[in-house]
Image (spheres, rainbow, N blue to C red):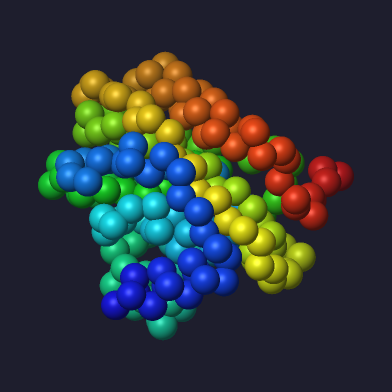
Amino acid sequence: MARAVVKPVFTALWRVELRGTDHIPEIGAIVLAANHESVLDGFFLALATRRRLRFMAKAELFGYPVLKQLMTGLGAFPVLRNADEGRAVARGVELLERGEAIAIFPQGTAIPYRNRPYRRGAARLALAAGAPIVPVALINTEKAMRPYRFRIGFPRVLIVAGEPIEVARQAPSPEAVAELTARLEEAIEGLRAPFGPQAHAWIEPR
C-alpha cells in the first residue's frame, strides 16, 4: 500500500531517475547502504528496488505512536544508539539469514555536520551474515527536503547503485569491520563524486 502511494508521488514530484539498480539482487540476503542527506531518504531508497526493505532506524522515531505503527508496518526495527547495538545487529542477522534485504544509512544522521563518520553497523551485519553490501548514492535529496534548516524543493533526484561488495561470513572483528566500513564509504563516495558536493546549509563546528 505504501509503495503504491509513495512511488508515483515521489517519481512525479522529484522526477526520480534510477541508475545501476540492476546491481541489487532480486532475491537473497543483502545489505543496502546509502549516504544520508534528507529525512526523505528512506522513501527514495525504497524506490531503488521492488523488494521490501527492512530499515534499521533510530529508536527515538519509535517514541511517536502513529510513526511507530507506520515504521513497524513498513518493516523498520529500532536501534538505540550506543546502548543496544548488539541486539539490533542480532536482529538484523536473523533477518538476513531469512534472505531479507536490510537498508541502512551508515552516517547515522541526515543533520549536515561536515564530519559524519560512517558507523560500522552495516559492516558488522554483512560480516556476521555473509551478506553482500550494495552501495547506493542518493543525489540531490538534500534539496528535496533540507534537514536542520527546513526547506522543501523539487530537484531531479538521482539514485545510483554500485556493484555489490561480496562479503564472506566471518566473526566481525574490529579490524575486519573497520576495513569493510572503509571500503563501503569509498564505494558510496565514488558513486556520488561525479555530481559534486551536497548543497547543504552546513552546521559548522564551533
